[in-house]
Length: 360
Length: 163
Image (cartoon, one colour):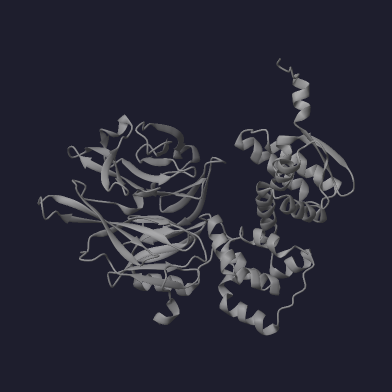
């Protein structure tokens, strides 16, 4: 009844899990859904629907579905992750990058049960971090890595930047920049059209400190600072948490977590790449309004309109449109946990893929 | 000597007549008709003086499509449009035959925004249903062999499980 090209248009909007199920409808459905073309089309519409929780202390992973129909990971994938991952470094449209127990990177598509191995950049030591992951086209992605090291020329602490291109399967040296920034917290950084942004804090004395924004310009291979609103120049460091993320329209978004006041403030910078940098406060969530106790932590933007955070060992989702909070799950441990967005896609995890079944 | 064109004349010049497959005539502004990539191409090469036949689309469908195009050529706020689109789709999906024809016509006329809107709505209709329910609703014959079906069920077994 429905011509195949129309059906193609429709199917690409469905979650990957539903697509697998619909393979049993008829031969036409089976043929279309198995087509690599629809699978790349599909990846373009994928919206992050669920999340993985990474409990770093005990290295176990838990999955908390936000959209029930979207969710599903074959148990084999989760077992694989628990067995080989030391830490999840980044996620991108259904791909998960983690540091393996053998100290290499692995990129896993839990949905297709495939993974690929990436050796660390040449001469790299232990202290490297994946800053960001970005799709280049339907199949390939790039990954930006940073390493803390002591500069050979100046003897000062420095950051070394590398880029991995999945299409070439190779690392490219980008730059070494002198830096007083000792620590990069990966889930606070964001990759926005050729720039990596992340917040850093400096202590002024025991209780007080200052927040600054740092941006690495990949094209010009330079580190620059991002102007922050004045109120970040002197803060109680333990009471404020800051993270950067991308707003759907490409603006830079800053999530300010006022733990003590139990407020989460959303700031936007409309044109982060121009000289006129101006932050606008766009949203403020008062957790008291929702009767929530405990200090909020680990917030992530999932899909365009949801903010995920936790209080009192519960994972909660705030909807910007409905101004409502929903409880979606629980943390087993309260500290050091963080939420990583994940959704099922058919995207390849690299040029050379292995099946996790072959590891058993 | 400069020619004086009145506002009415100007407006009139921008109108175009579209004729559906059942010979129903619709007079719309050029910018409304331009929403369709196909009609835009016809207007570019043949002008807007003579009526443009839209032979594959029936009157009631064309009327509904032009209603969509008109709303979308006004440049209203995004929230207003989203709300309007939702109401438009809610009405359309009640009648499956009409909805189906609307989808084909939007494809034929190449109105990408509407194609996407219908595809997303259609996907929403499929989302919560089992393969059996989909076959029933859309009158699809299961032509898979037993072996094929079993193979899919075992390979993607977890996809059939609730959480």
